[in-house]
Each structure stands twice: as C-alpha cells, then as structure tokens.
Length: 222
Image (cartoon, rainbow, N blue to C red):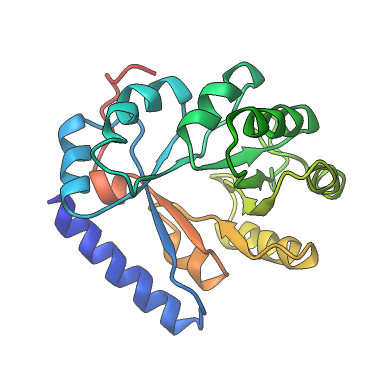
C-alpha cells in the first residue's frame, strides 16, 4: 500500500509541476513522525529516501541505525529546534528547515563548524502571525536572513505552515513572493491536504505524511 501511495503521489506531483511550469523536480518529503516502523520499512523498500521528522530524539531512535544500510538517506528536520538539541540535530539531519531566530542560527553555525559539516538550512516563516507556532515573523525575516548570511549559514529557502483556518494558497503565494524578493530559490510548503496548490504556487519541497503512510500511530513516543 505504501509503495502504491508513493507511486501515485510522485505521478501527481510531476503532473502538477508540468501543468504549472515548474522548472525543477519537486522533492517529496515523507513525514515519518509517529509512524509505525513497518510503514517506514515499506517506504524504504519502495525507494523513498527523503524523510521529515519533527523531534530530534524520536528521529535518532528511528534513523541512526538505518544510516549504514541506506547511505543515500536525506533527513529533514521540520519541527522546532531548541538550542540544547542542536548538536544532535546537526549530527543526524541533512537539512534543518526551522531556523527562526538569531541565537539558533549562531548555535547551528557553530555546531556545523565543530562537526565539519556543510550547512543546509531553510528559515521558517510564521506567515499567519500565530502565537503558538514557531517561525520568524514577516517583519523579522529580513534581519534574520541578513544575520544568517553574515555568519556564513547558507539559507537555501523558506518554509511555512499556513494557519488551518485560512486559505493556504494566500500563504503559499506570500511565501513565494518573499523568497523571490530575497533571492531564495527553494520553498518547503504544502502538506497532504494542499500540496497540489502549493506546487502550483511555487513549492520545491512538499511535506507529506498521511498521504504516504496513512493515519499516524499516536502511541509512538513523542
């Protein structure tokens, strides 16, 4: 079933990209948080290699041992990152999508230097100005991006999670506009319920959980 889901999703992603003139291949990030190990194994057997996780500790338990077996894994951190988890996050993840403040940027940059790794990061933008959600404000983005560039933390794109009670397309269009203004080519936006709209509005990465795996196992440790 998982293999079928992935095949259908990749066809839908490719078709949507063609229909809306996307020049590059869209990256499907399979969101594996709180999913059964058997489902993860199925996805790997089906050839999926890019996965997204929200929590560092859960991701370590799931993926550390799989690195040896799957050298082409690409892991994205798509949940908020606390500075005391940066060392572990940099060691495990290939892409950190949730840079949202200068202190975190400084800590991530220093840890990349210590571990001799190449930084690959996105800035998370709180386009809906939601108090309970992570991400830099629209007003704060220019200064944060300038700071990241000044310290040599390469920011490749922007990431956002639109408010659930507002049209997602408005937020996707806004993120694309802001990215273009700042010379950023990559956009991580769109989830299982709205990824086609996100691709139409410029997404280069879509984060799909239930569309790939089905319902989450809420008994998985958080």
